[in-house]
Image (cartoon, rainbow, N blue to C red; front, side, top):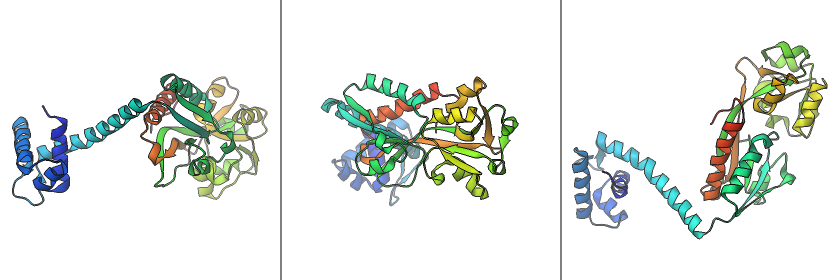
Length: 304
């Protein structure tokens, strides 16, 4: 049976290209490492490296063991870090802000479960960054942001939570309610109800209207999802919202929904956090709980 020290040996030899360098890294002698390598090969029944090659080359069996090492060793390191954190204490702070304005449907149950598991972590919400929270993360005033706006960054980690469809929401008797899917031109004579953020941050503009150089007749900005839905049912405009956020209303026939284009527009949701904080035990737990709760509580979402 293979042991952790065997995986570390194969990893070191493969990375450094020689037994001598690997022995130096592992703080042992070349002869001891050579003996251990023979022991591993005896257990496997075949050589793991092609002899007399410089740098050493893996056999097919060696490659399998290396792939195992690449999977197991990082997971072992993460678990050791999390255990050390628990040994030192499970206190912490999680200052949250939400750029997903329909998130409370799944986030509140997730927070409740998180608090049960991590009672000493202080979880707070900051409403000062309600519609543009990423600057708060950069400034150190927030610890985690729920957002759909992922971008390349060396400092920020974007943990994928789930993916879902954005749909057009109309009153049941609206002219567009009968259409299984709409095209950008369908919105040219409509009032589009949106959150008060820049158009280029909204999926309906980024992935649907702008590529076709199309615009709605009017744009009216509304702060709250419930208010948007009330205005839609009163036929005061149409909106584009996550399908999971309006599913219940659609089932009750209070609204109608249509896909944006024949293929629909998919959106992804992320938990953004500083790279230095992503491996903290309670942060990893927050990721895990958020994914599990959203998949259980929300219709028609998929894990990223």
